[in-house]
Image (cartoon, rainbow, N blue to C red):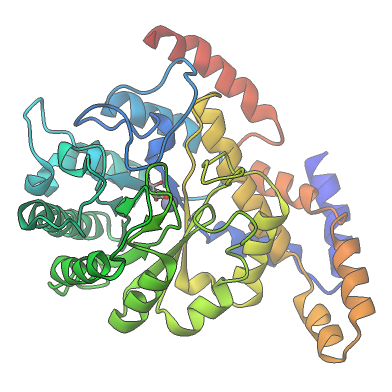
Amino acid sequence: MVSKNYALAKEQYASLGVDTDKAVAALEKISISIHCWQGDDIAGFDSSGEASGGIQATGNYPGKARNGDELRADIDKMLTLVPGRHKLSLHAIYAETNGKKVDRNALLPEHFEKWVAWGKERGVAFDFNPTYFAHPKSDDGFTLSHIDDGIRNFWIEHGIACRKISEYFGRALGETSVMNTWIPDGYKDIPVDRLAPRMRLADSLDKVFAEKIDPKYHRDSVESKLFGIGSESYVVGSHEFYLGYSVKNGVGITLDAGHFHPTEVISNKISSVLMFAPRLLLHVSRPVRWDSDHVVIFDDELQAITQELVRGNFLGRTDIGLDFFDASINRIAAWTIGVRNTQKALLAALLEPTDMLRKAEAEGDYTTRLALLEELKTYPYAAVWDYYCEKSGVPVKEKWLAEVKDYEKTVLAKRA
Ligand code: RNT
Ligand code: ZN
């Protein structure tokens, strides 16, 4: 059935001059940076067990991972349900310190040895994130831009420690680790001085990034935000701040789909940002009325993002990371849905007859452009997707759900 449908789809796409085998081969090469924190609601292993800094996972679906072994087991399960080879994005709070209290500024590569052993066994490389939240020293809402030298320096030390861990990932696993810097800093209410915290943040970042590290092993990226819970009126690390910082200093820029005004989309920013910033890290997410981090669905914006990446030939300079955390549904299903949708959208974009569309546009034939774009929406990309899943040895269509339900019964239910 799958191969029969694929053969028919192949013919239909060929009539548009699109080679489906080529599209599948291109998709196979794209690895998604899958965020580990969907597995435990960003609890991590080092502290209160709850996110802070204006982000929040809501829901209490049973069975969340409570330690590294459970989290890795859940990720293993999820990886059997998505096609392709992917990376895993870790946060500093996922350090394993053997019950010893190690503060954030004292974290070392050795605290991630278990992760690295796991990654080596599976051929999974890592990306990294310092954790500037869920800590007593971030409780008043400021970290790298804090007015207090002691607190600011503590967080600078954390950033420096994390870059060493990130470099270790790169060396140990033979693939660059992209380290994403996001801080929660901001004010609930209207500030008088918007400049001073930003100057302190720039200075702190300069100190964190001072040491040159071989980009073969480690790269930096900086993530902006517009508002958070408790930082509604002012966020120090705004988009303009980081865009400027990125271009001036040659570090990557991160665009999170939920970090802009509710009607503003990141798909329209990619081509501008990549004209000037060296690299882009995406946090593919789904904001619903606010930065709610809902599971990524196959919606217009997801397709617009992947179309931009393919049409602009930006895949080589973009890392596609995911960032959502829904605790109200099975967490392994949440991951699976988000990863598969992102891949499906990439595939749909790879199956587009872009040259044909570009030509119509250049000739001013906007009628053809609109007509083709609309007809393409019902072309049989799903048959190509099913073929790719089957070829990769992962469940076709919703068959993965039965596996998740089974895992829920045999593994997750026992965690209560
Ligand atoms: C927060 C940022 C950040 C976090 C993760 C957990 O608004 O999006 O990327 O979601 O670091
Ligand atoms: Zn993010």
